[in-house]
Image 1 (tube, one colour):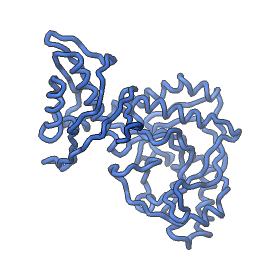
Image 2 (image 1 turned 90 degrees about the vertical axis):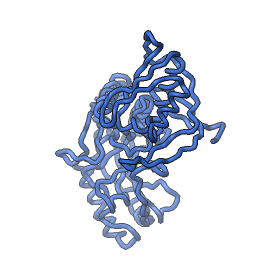
Image 3 (image 1 turned 60 degrees about the vertical axis):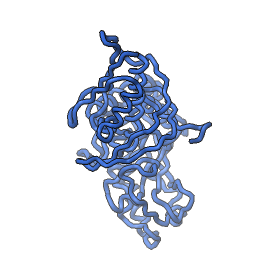
Image 4 (image 1 turned 90 degrees about the horizontal axis):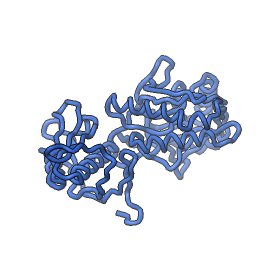
Length: 355
């Protein structure tokens, strides 16, 4: 582990340092799913921010987690749970498989209950990060003018660059789903979807109204770029997105939304700042037209596909300053991955108007 720059994990708005631990992979006897048991736990200091109830027999607190994460707290034949109970001198009650409910921790000492809760939440956060994302915050860029110009871009690229390796119609974005991604979320049940929707509404009053100043944002989508080092080996091409007046309002709103959702533990961190861009070509679409991905791909993440590059040198040279048009951004969506609404855009689980 890098001593001076340890891995940090945000849980419930608090930041913890994570020790470098060795994970052992087991295979579930019935479901054939992977389990991980930490031989050494994360360093944590008990805090009194949690709601811990004093009882006749000691202390008690509960944790509300999606049932999909229970198996990671239990471990192979209950080993992780037993280790947690032994280390913290607590008793941990977890709902049966397939049932929703709270994990209840009881113990004779407040610090032990605190420690058990912290370690359970760190375990849950570790395994949440291994799940494919389910939702993302987005601005829709699929207005008619933008779609029309995008289709023109596609037609011209295919006419002038189709002989270049990998450049073909299957790698272009669906024009109805053109969007700007603010950040991705792993929401494992309806309760977490509701939490994300409520947080989005809070953001409106906390800072969105003030930054937007009651006006929609006039945005220009112009120019293309790539994010790797070799233009002959490109996975994704992006359209640049910026405010027409060259102000920082869009960037500020995107960054504040990301920070607020990161603090809640619902969003997965990818960048220090949001990269304002819209995917126009992606080699993942060749295999799956519905494919979506995080802005960065972490090694070993479930659902990661082998990338197939294409030669973008001529595309970048000829269409470097291609203008896709201008659009007003007035709505932030909590978009559901792998979904389509009546307009062709992603189904919205929640949304807010920013002006």
